[in-house]
Length: 612
Image (tube, rainbow, N blue to C red):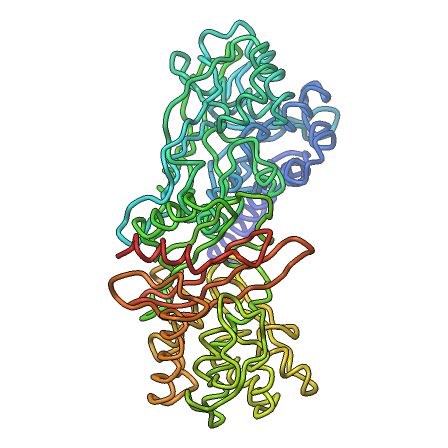
């Protein structure tokens, strides 16, 4: 060989030896990588006993420490990825990346960890120490999480005023530094409140020792029910004060809120976090994420004495965003005041006819006849002759005029009179004469009436973010069914809101879907009548208020238009309707009672007078 060839051969041999040496650690030991991968995989999969068997520590103790490593962190998942393994003979050092999903907040905590390995009995074993879990841990230390929520954002009226009102909130909690036995306090408290004791203990131990730590927020009724038992738990105390959290002037749409002990949080798998709130109904539920925000989360190292020794990671929370609605507080107050002045149960809903915005809705239980289920938004009720607004529109479209003669034989018209043979379409409507409307329905067709009903939004799809019913009316199969539907029976069902939207359409000449949140896009359509037909229908409604069945709503000032109806709902129970408008405000009002003498029109008049 030439000198150049001999030099090249030596280099090949040296490079080969180096390659083998790096691969084998320059000795006979196998690679440590399989042991590292197996340990991280078993740890990630929750196979703690198998992972512990790959260490040189006490297997039972190691398995327990691995299992508890992220318990107090509300971690939903953990992922480990091997980064590198540096091997020197029968020792090695592994570097890995840990990713921890921090529960419901959607945050991820990532950190780099490392641990040593050594060969024992021909097998690679991890050198066990607390810092294997995290480099910040020492003997006796553990990881803990501290969460802090900003106050829940408010549901607001159209002017940005809160719809929730101040009410007393009781905060049950502890001064962590004063507890003689934090574990006992956490355990007994958690058993009574049905919470996770380890998570409660973790929050207590991670909190500043001198300040008051609220563990549970309660309304007065809940507090007085549970405090006799909680008072026996050592170290528990409470503070109270006014907050906008539990009470609202429009509970049906705003909804209700639960706190730390809510079963709704447990059902979602959320870990215990002081200050957590959850919407249970209404807009509070529909907009939970926006209103609640996310907590500021800090991962801590806590020593055996329960003191914080290090802060490893902080994720800044997001403050909740207020929700602006179309409700008007002064109209809401007027509705509540009108209902408070009545001896019987009642409901009021008001909408802006120009855009469909819901202005007010209120209800009150009183008297002996309860309100029907479903509330202002979602009740399914027979509207009776209040529905004659819709059937009158169909009849006007079929050629009837206000002066069309038609005797009224109905002696049970709500608040009207028997005008006998001199009656006309206008007087029949004003008196709420069901017999006349049943007779006139012979000029209608099932398809024609159904089309008019649809054009008034009956059965339309609404996007209110809360449960609401736009109405339903099955297509009549015969003359009897058609006559029943023309009088608001025969399977016709409406909610108070649905009927208010009918009145709003007559007022505006354009149909709107109701709107509750100001950012929601409007949905509109053309009313089923010509301008002349709408004018005739409005005049019919004005006559009903001026001198007919709805005359109790004829208050001074701007004229009121509407229609009344009475529906028997039981042997001794009645439901009175008023549906109408004044200016740009359309309303539907209900009142229950034990006789047909109830007058929702009078209740509507009281409300409309208060709103000006």
